[in-house]
Length: 402
Image (cartoon, rainbow, N blue to C red; front, side, top):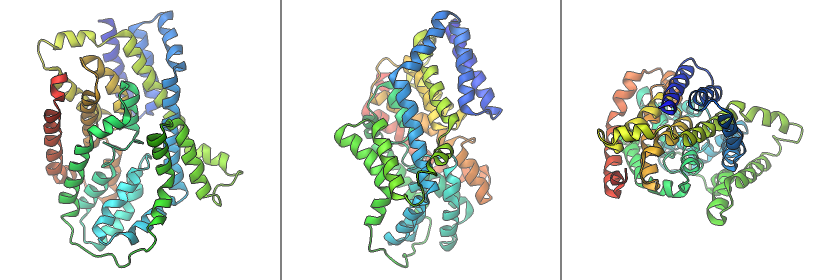
């Protein structure tokens, strides 16, 4: 019971600090301190901190998350992502595909506030296609997050895999039908509501777009084909991107670029998440919840509701996955790609719908709409997506594994 109280109080402290707009990295470390103090305030507990800090999984996760963030920063800072958009505008025959592809491309580069970077371009394209502000908001929000269920460089997927021990690619494969429904919903309620307009000029150099994407292609292909871990493929991708922009980044400028692109708060966040996970595992503080719930509420519903609530409460996918997965795993009798997939999908749903989700807040503010209009516009595709997730869970038999 002492461990369970520690978990609950740590969550309250974490939520309060986030509400007070304290950086997540500092918030999670304070929550870890509260969790440890209430769960095991002994030398053994202190020793846990050293053990977790020196574990390879902790160091690996910190490196991967920060290198992905730095890669996204370089794409934006160098202007390479804008060159990709330029090539895209000349490569597709339908302007509606351009307006959908702009946020999708930015979604490949995890960066805080990325929705605000793509919004002005969607605004320009939308004006030429007579798209209203609420519809622009939907396009920017929906297509930016369309990759998060299957993209191997998604910080949320990486965390779910790292914490659960289930293969990253197996989780992504499990989510492919959900990704397909996301595309279909985006086409019907996003692109379908816009009048078709042909692009004025088609590019004859589609390989230029491939060239701009090459750093990401390298990181993924080396991992998939040769099994080289991300903490080795991502430096290669970063060096390649720097080479592509060698006139912009000389040796003199590199230190200041690294200082701008690397986030100390992100390092603290990744480290804090692993500490939080490790302490929960060692205290087994969720066991009383399991025993009490098993006789009253189906564990499947508990997992779904808690995952959804954590995603909505935090409004930040890596944080929600990093906190939710270690809390929910002890409730599951079978840890597999299907059960972890369920946790991830409902955490993702909560995050993507959260009213404190930064992308929603920034996009709504940029286009001069409001949350009521936004949610009124998105409810149909959202309901379709949620229903299909439940259907997919039933088809795969995941519901029977809880």
